[in-house]
Length: 196
Ligand code: SAH
Image (cartoon, rainbow, N blue to C red; front, side, top):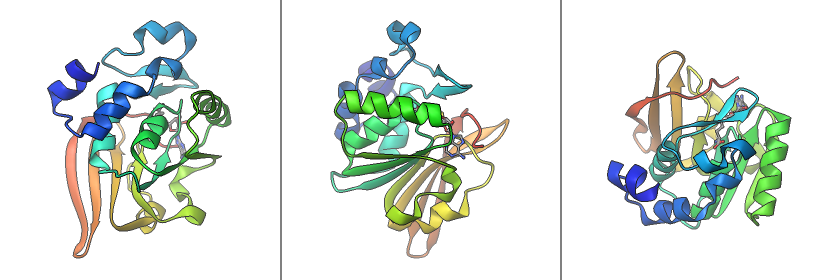
């Protein structure tokens, strides 16, 4: 998976590649999908939601430019796989999920794997996590049509917001808080579930 899907497509950050090698993706998918866990695509995790394609997880993590000191906010915990990859690359991860059952399942999987530097909450991620702001990076794993304004206010100076935007047609964007204002870079077309 790492060589064929990630390195071959240009993922180069050694920390991200190490995390993608270490975090056991098969532990996060539904029991019937374990042997397909490393396929080059998304999989259903129930409740009409999906675990993102490995390449997209790696790309979003690389775009976040994490260090071992980084504090990261994720919107859309889902099965917790991206959460675990972020936790392996950063200091602490806060993750918000709107669907209680998914958050509970992710909490169980992360605890089973001994991932301790994560904080999970059930709620609408459009509000971010004001009490724990600010964050060096924010990753949004469900697509809104506009950037939720609260998220921009919770970035550190030089903070990175990695977010899919759009409905029937979506692009992944990297927004960076910079001294002269927000830098916006369109990365590639994507297909995420919609932010509710
Ligand atoms: N990162 C996840 C991707 C899950 S799909 C993974 O690796 O599994 C996107 C998730 O966003 C879904 O679980 C969905 O329930 C959640 N979601 C949708 N709208 C949301 C909102 N407003 N706030 C928080 N989570 C939301």
